[in-house]
Length: 203
Image (cartoon, rainbow, N blue to C red; front, side, top):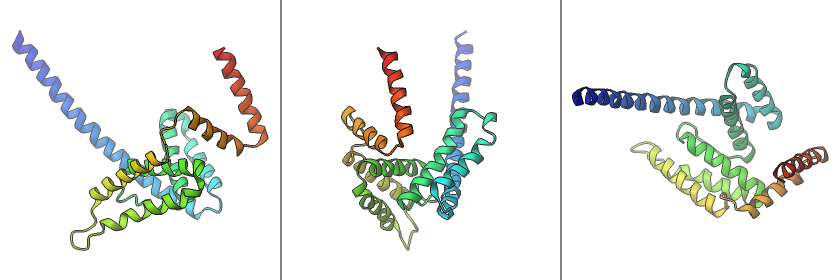
C-alpha cells in the first residue's frame, strides 16, 4: 500500500515540477510580449499630437473585443499603455530590450508618484534613472544586462524610500488632495457624492 502511495506522490511531484516549468516559461513569454507592446505603444504615443488622445485611441482599440476576455486581462493590457504614456510624458528613457518588465513598471510608478507629489524633482529623478545605463556599456564583453537591471532595481528602491512611496494616511490625504485640486468642478461634485455614499455605508 505504501509503495502505491509513494508512486502516486512521486507522480504528482513530477507533474508539479513540469507545471512549474511550464508556468515560468509562460510568464517569461508574457513579459516579453508586454515589453513588445510597451515599445509599440511608446512609439505611437511619442508620434501623437496629444498623449491623452493617443492613450484614448489605443484604449479604444483594446476595448473592441473586451467582451470576449476577462476584465482583469483587459486592465493589464491597458496598464502597459499607461506605462508607455508615463514614460513619454516624463521623458523617461526605458530600454525595453535590456530592462526587465518589472523595472519598467516600477520606474513609471515612481515617476507618476514624483510627478504628483514632488513635481519640482521630476527632472532630477528622470536624469538619475536615464544615466544608469551608461555604467554598464562594456565594449569588450557587451552590455551587462543583469548588472544593469540589478542596479536599476536598487536605485528604484532607494528613490521609492526617498520619495515616500509607502504612504501613511496623512501622506495619502495630501496625494488625494493634490489630485482633487486638478479635477473639474463637475468631477469634484461627483467625488463628493461618492464620498457621502461611502460615509453613509460605514455609518
